[in-house]
Length: 370
Image 1 (tube, one colour):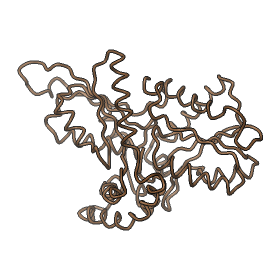
Image 2 (image 1 turned 135 degrees about the horizontal axis):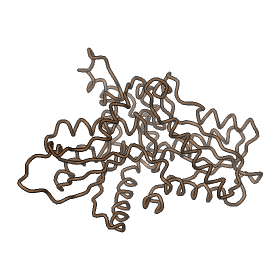
Image 3 (image 1 turned 90 degrees about the vertical axis):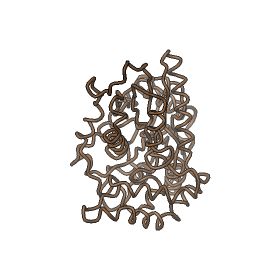
Image 4 (image 1 turned 90 degrees about the horizontal axis):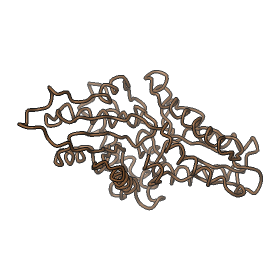
């Protein structure tokens, strides 16, 4: 999950424009997530085509090099779901997006320079796609896996072109976000729905969308395995046990309260499932906290904020944290720069001397196989 409405230093570079005005109706998206082609919609082809299964992984993408940062930001702000303008100004969206990208590029580049000069998200997602395809073959399922990024290569349109070229007849759409939000899965699914509506060749493509999958046993077990490893041995501070800090990507509070976004509920359920498994394994820890990171702009976001939680825990005498990125399955700027650098520095400034961070799942075999 990369650089959607607020990601690490890059997102703060947006000046709070991203996410601030998105208005989405989750109900509309459900029409697409459950849609399948009917027999009447399949064009006559003389004879039935051989069944060819494809899996489409959805993610948001990120700049792979520093030279990619500005065009990436331009794509981001060129999306009406991210920067929503009035009807009277909609014609100016490309121009405004270009101006914002120019103004924010310098600050955004600093974040990517700090993690090696670009986002590793594409490499990781490609690796996950290859691993998933191998796992499907191992289950005697002949399927090809495709990757579609929202704001950088390979774009959704590129993936759809490959799917059409390969003659896929049955498509499973799998967002790489464990929990559904209108700001992540929703944005990608809206684009995909638009492509399906406009391309007559796709009318015969049966498709199934998995909106969220945080409750999968393999995902929960894989997360707890990583947490268990992080809890092993003495705490880094040398005193007591580690407090588990779950940090999830935040969204504006209005999305949950007004638009009915299920994200907060699904995040909380995820943490509940993980803590149940931790309890079942008898793992010792010093309590846990759920917080939300990557807040930008003046609007109220889901609370508590990760930064505030770190300060609060320090005041409560917590001196050792095990940080768990709860809404991410890949390393990217939010984990590598925002958590590993900014939040760690904040923790140390407030007297928390013990710091460990659970890695993202990446190509974890249990996670992929499930």
